[in-house]
Length: 252
Image (cartoon, rainbow, N blue to C red; front, side, top):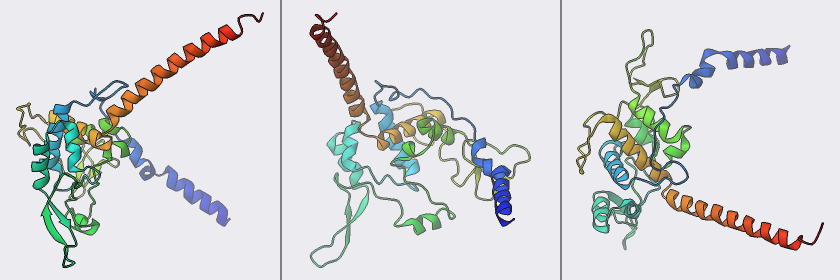
């Protein structure tokens, strides 16, 4: 009887409305990304604009711990520009000759520091929620770029009959539809250095492009290698086929 009761309880849990809360999210918007497909490459201008959005909007809560300042040279910034960005950050270093830790300006060899000293500090500053590090966020979420873009542009008023908890925002693309992060972007939230129109959609697309690069800076190298490997295999197949015909030419 106890075994049957456990089975019944487990079945009730699986069939409860809450068990499927994560399955009622809206399908992500389909966006045509320049870096998509087998031959796609990153739009360097978009990546640089996305870096600006990250620094001005996202970096107050979200870290980028797997990206070093020297990596910014790969998106088209020159050394002086990357050094200037690094110098705006304070990095803990040491110990010095007296055995003490000390703070200094960032260098190209440093990784982007987290906005918080530890997890507890991050939660204390965000009403208990832990802002995720964004280094691999595009790879870590189903739907990848499309999901992140949809989430950033999907904030809206809750439908009639839906109550949103205090400190939460309604977003149909987030599991459960309630998210602790308020709408991070809107029209004109940043003024682009290159003069690009700063609509909400453009800002979201640029920062997602930057995060896609951050998740895989070697994407273009991987694709080029993939093309070379495919071409090599095609050539090898042709050669082996010709060799096979030559070897078996006299066999009937």
